[in-house]
Image (cartoon, rainbow, N blue to C red; front, top):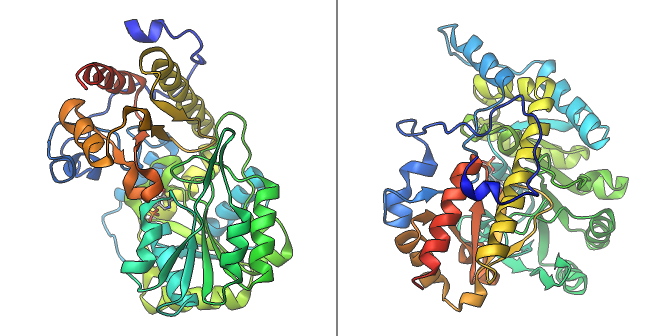
Length: 406
Ligand SMILES: Cc1ncc(COP(=O)(O)O)c(C=O)c1O
């Protein structure tokens, strides 16, 4: 154990079966996280702690499923058998006590593609799409990619954490031009897992005003510190009727490069409209490896996920203690889910543009600029802690050293 880590006594220690401490080199693997450094940070050598994938090996069962299939030399068109749908159905049942039917599930090549397809299926150009910034940047794309109007129901910062402005949400939902709500649950970047009462309130408002809910639940398996995820569509039959749930194994099991996600929709009319989009572009064809990886993950990798969550909690506690000890002006918004930390640097009084430059030039860190999540992100940075603890330790050291020259 390194000198710094030794001083942090409260970091959780358990006996791991899987080695999340292993420093796996990602050079020459065409990893976006590494290859885009020059373009984004103007330096090839920043420590890349930005885009949401992990520096950990995927679970052994997933690796085996992919290798076994790769050994067969023909990679032609593929189908997804009942096993694929059963794996998803069972996952929802065992993780969220959500009972779904195989017929409600459709494959999608990604969650962001699902959001775009839903926008095209259920809104017309010029119509409003409600989002809750600061939020994952592609949520803003409804405007520039699809010529819809992005309508902002900004989250409110409170001493208890980020909360929803329900009065404004109802006002926006009541505007007949606003047809669709993009919910981020758990929320990236603020890390909130919305509670049942919050979900019910948002859902009932949308039911009252005929607003369709597209619920991006991609981070739902990465629950920290005992938090529980409740799928929006599981709250009530009425809410399920207006909800398209978007999920994937990609964040949970580090499979983002396999381009495999799915939607769950119990309302047949909404599902038909989504399928028209997906089939129209032949996106349902999918790829050979992703569905096999999903099945291996959902059916045989829960022990790996339990350990991953423990390890991530340890990393987050480490960041929290380090900041409190060495950089008390920098505030960590404690996440309830995800491995993405929302760090508040506003006490440093730097404009976002300068903060961003400081991170790459002075601290040698490639972090996400808070401003890319909306204007509410001014003065924040997002740090991805899904890396070996030693890497996180190095990053914090670099930040601490650089902060002395501010
Ligand atoms: C909230 C959210 N939705 C979607 C995605 C990406 O999904 P996909 O790669 O399946 O398009 C991310 C990735 O970080 C995310 O944070």
